[in-house]
Image 1 (tube, one colour):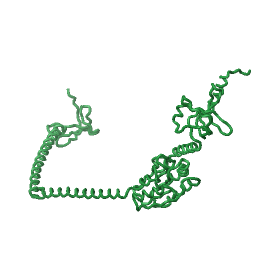
Image 2: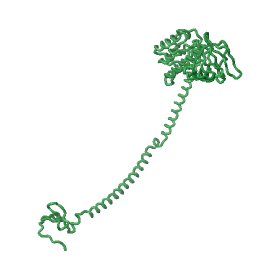
Image 3: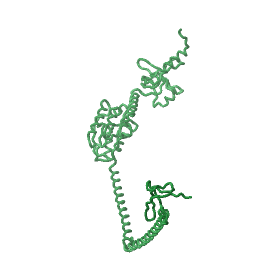
Image 4: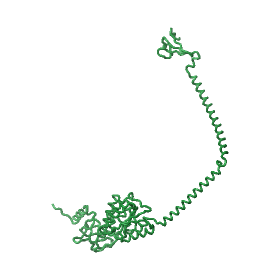
Length: 400
């Protein structure tokens, strides 16, 4: 049987179909704005269209209040949001969360995707950054010969340290083929053994003009460079993928020149100050050692050595007497102790009683001491104080 549904029920079923679709939960849509209206509530209503279709859009106040620009009719944009059904009006529409001008928005999207990809691979990791040398002898420069960046860098370096060597690899910094030339320039400089640092640079511009420095091949060329790389692309507010992957980011080309080489005059002053400090430190060290030497020369060891020897001889004699006395005292105590132990041993010696007229009788067969009358055999050995008697037992008389 065919079910009978209300309008609301049908709309709710359609809405559930939209809401359960994974593709429609987060989607980028590009098109041209028409019928734009910024409501008093703060919400924005407009239609997004192309030459074959159109779709209604709404952007709530909490999202559009962060927009850096005001959308206008006829503006081509890229929107991010989800598609669902507005049941009360019975129509589907895009609930917009972000708006970007088309072209610029696509580039920003590509920029963010590549940035996330390279960051996951570890190309931005601090552990992979190489140290920029303090005073490079030879600097490699990858930039355009016709731009302002090369003039700024050369001017600053000449002012700060005029006799440093600079090798320039001229490349295109925008347009088709620019990224390949930048990669080749970095590779060519890496084949020159004595280059200490490389500056990859260009002046300011739009995101489209700076795009060569956002390409993956340029990022990998910088990362794979054996020579430290300083990125100086655009103005201070411009950030490129090259900035994140390079070993050091300079906000401007001029700042890169100041970063890569110190001022010669400042170094000379520092060297002069260090030289003075070194001389003063040596003088102070020598003065202290001289004072110690004078003190030693005035000490009794040098002024009255015989008196010192005599004094130590007296101390030695005194210590010898004390040692001798202690030794005799210890020896007397040990001797007394020894004699006491010997007396105890003599008193406990079982043979001592033989001198008082006693004897020890032992069976000849088992060599056991006879303690009772029944222990005696036919022949016995009688031990006395000055010898042994071998006797035959003729008779045994039991004591009453």
